Image (tube, rainbow, N blue to C red; front, side, top):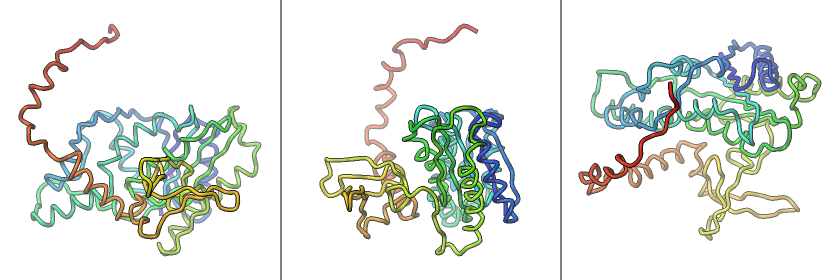
Length: 320
């Protein structure tokens, strides 16, 4: 069993110290551990070209990124190889580091388990034997823990955005850990309780992998959403039947106050819409296919319609 740690902060920063403590916990239970720091990699932003998705949906391809001149293939291989994943990040302006967002964008649709399942089916139905299909390691069971560290309670988007990184790959998050009021470099070493929690988070990743999937146990911060344990709930008053939606897994429900505590309630029939389940992910694929990716009957007119925007203004760029 291999557990990969991804550090999204400074070398020996507080988030990295907790990550190493978590990896030590995983190692205690016999896991092989490895550490990658995103700051050591050259990762270019996603261009939104959709070539990866087109490759899968039209050709049953592997969904590979067309950009080859950076370190994406390196981190891609490490993530595909691992069984457990622990991601740690400092919190900047309520969010994890921008490096993680870049990686998330690059892996998003191309590594979506539902998309890759469809690509695999296309190859089988069309009897495609040439080229690469989706990496078979995409479909194995994996678990993850998330660790976010900030200097205050300005943290609203940190763990939710980190969870988004694992969501498309259907990696089950079994532990989320948020550490506040830890701003000075290395100061988390004084927080014995947090170090202990981090070590337990690493152990949780391994322990859950050693259990049957139906006995998997989430042990992190409770959260509000019963499906993904996120605290980020969006209010949508326009839908009276579903006035609230989880900002991470997308499941719809209602917010109520029960015994003085806010509770996000989801009808049993609506749980299947959550993106932590494959049913919710396939539903999303159908939505894309039938709405945003459906060709417009006037598509041939589009180049002419875009001409005025293409010719409007030149880009201002720094002198080189």
